[in-house]
Length: 77
Image 1 (cartoon, helix red, strand yellow):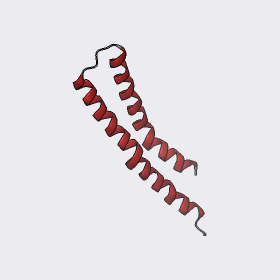
Image 2 (cartoon, rainbow, N blue to C red):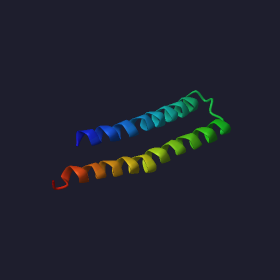
Image 3 (cartoon, rainbow, N blue to C red):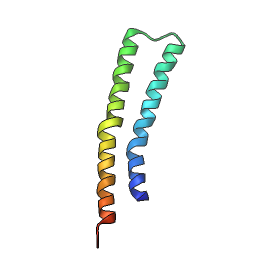
Image 4 (cartoon, rainbow, N blue to C red):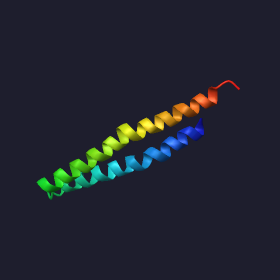
């Protein structure tokens, strides 16, 4: 069970870190009043892409892998 959890963490933590960094950069741009329409458009697209990657495909794959591992774990011998 712990191995499955670790696998899920390995897959999702880097994406979460990327999302936090992207949002922090955009926040910095706003706080320094250097944000432009182009920066906002680009940053929003990048953040959205990361959120989609984090939310749907990655977590689904991680969940499916975890579920299939649990099935094996609880399968009668």
